[in-house]
Picture 1 (cartoon, one colour):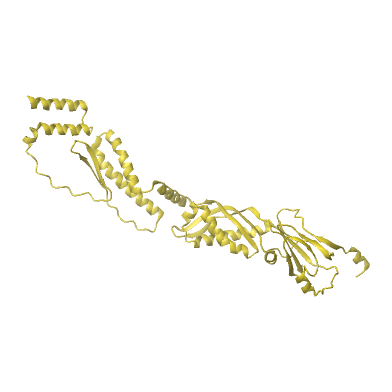
Picture 2 (cartoon, helix red, strand yellow):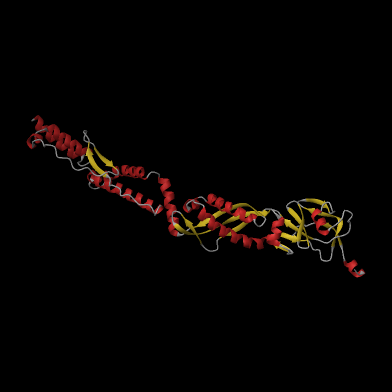
Length: 374
């Protein structure tokens, strides 16, 4: 070696990385023609790791701490270079620093809708996006699989590959989960956990640890969104039959005030309950297209008059209207016409049913009593 070359050569006493540039995951210490001083100092800060590479082969890996570079602290490099215990000369080696900090708030998304297989709807097209966080857990593996001998490797470069991995893994994970997609879409925490479980081993192949994965938004096709809204509404209503009966009971006072009074309630109630059954069947069909719907017998409804003259509505959901009973032998018309008590009972029933006014009732009652008392 000439004197000029020796003067140009510098001996490095301190090896460290200040991480003065954000977003750099891997950085190679600039060696040029320099050599590392035997007994020099290596400083690895918290959230860092250092790797010595000799002629393309990884030698020693250092965790956070301060080290004096000797044959004792560089056992693999000593073996590769065949140093003996008395070796104290400067040496040459490539040194790479890695940032092991947690990379927070990294964004992922599906640029185009992806198609997944679903148990309820067959095939579903969706778009989604969210955030995730990761860090370098194995510098040796990250060096061999990702960064290599490059002077530096940035976060943006690795995340181009990671986003593609997220989308492809998400497609297979959701399709193989066995959980109906419509349930996952309603619970984004569950969806994020299922995707994270599938991504953890994928990230580990590159020396990365996936810390967190969250789904922030899912965009569904319009028809699937309607089905999801229907299922949510069904959950809020609860039992459909009970809800229909409640609605029918509330309609009785209103129907009595309408034209025709109680006369049309029986038919209206039957139609209302039948409509409720049809709606329930339609919702079940929307939520489970493959299911075979069983025919539902129409509900029977009728208007009955109590012994005290009151009027009520009788309903049996899901039953077939009974055949009309044989008429009971009618009392002689003359006897019924001459019975004042029967006339008063009928008038009272008509009044209670709001079929006649109070004035009409009082007038008719007066006439009956006049005939009775002479």
